Length: 261
Length: 254
Image 1 (cartoon, chains in turn blue, green):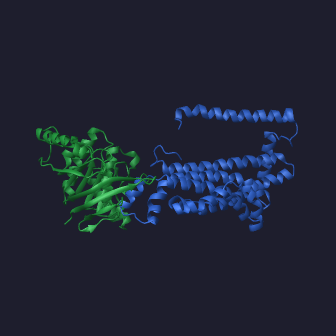
Image 2 (cartoon, each protein chain N blue to C red; image 1 turned 90 degrees about the vertical axis):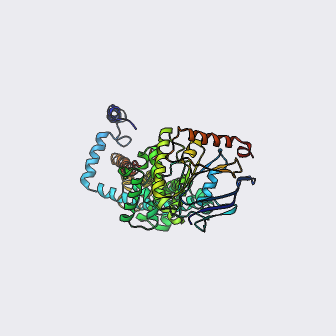
Image 3 (cartoon, each protein chain N blue to C red; image 1 turned 120 degrees about the vertical axis):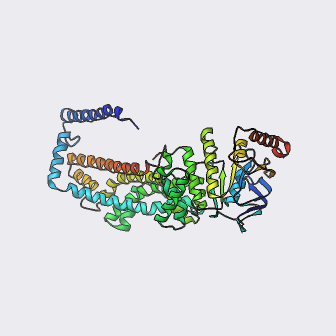
């Protein structure tokens, strides 16, 4: 954590670096490359942005992409957290499921695209499935690690206070105790899921979407619009991560001291 | 009624390599209702194992433990415990920590908060009910842990070197407070410590364990009048007696 007094000059340094890069980029594009197909200039990109804004599809693109992302991350939460809890709490389940998880986990999410199409067709759910594959493993592994790291004294204190059954111990002790780590897993998952988005929309599951439009404008050779969508993808990804972080901080800062999230 | 009777209690751990470690051997002990017992012994003598077995957290290898005529074979609401390390749930604020056991019993919020408030008041921390454990000092955390254990109104309160991690001043203060709480609540207290000073200050009866495998070397009634004066000559005499005893081969070595 940086203190406020030190933050102010840092902030300005960051802004001036961005400005510097934009000026350099403009100069290189206009004086050196001189070909907007190879390198559109910031001015080109900005005017393309205004065009797209006027065409009124940007919000729809963002909406559809968030839908794909939401399906993927939502499914990853619904599947990943229970599996993480099962293998984190029950040694038998760990021994049973661990080999399967370790075999499937290294397969890149994008390698699932053919089966996503075969199983789910060209639908929003198919795009969500690819994102799900990317997002589910960080959630499983962090939930598992959180459960394995529960201090024994919490479980024993719980037992002595009448929290005996596995179900109650999981609900009242294990889950809250490992919540910071579960939240970290969700944050990582959301990052990975967002990375999978462009590829998930590449095979034409929808008429809108940030990834879909990126490919669409590439096919039209409108590279300035491609850059607009690149920047949008980056900004929204950043925003999502930022929202997660605020949520995590607000929830856990009051009882977390010196733990990492 | 209300006595804790330990008969021929032994506990052997099996190590990962298959070898056996005998932690306590053939402990016989009767602890009376409302008695303040200190268990004293060198590190690794099985004090904590004995306490955990009474708590029902460790299984016994042979023998039996009867509380109030009932056999103990698992965690039991009649037995409360305060651990050596900080055991408050960091995700719950103070009042929700104290009310946890009542919540597990299915008591409604109004009733359980009222009751938790009462016990928080007993340890003098009412004004911290909305604080989180991370905001409290070590001494305050152990006070809350005492309130949390007492909230279920157990017959026996087990304490495993609860003040071991505290500085000497806080430790003395908490010892005084604990005696006060004991006087008000009339619990049986079994208090594990390796400090002779602490044991002589607190206990009605002091149980000295031998080194591993732990068994009762001697039970010493401490008849000093309360409140006890740590610097008084009577206190010093008892201390010397206990120190001499634990230096004897029959207590320190097997």
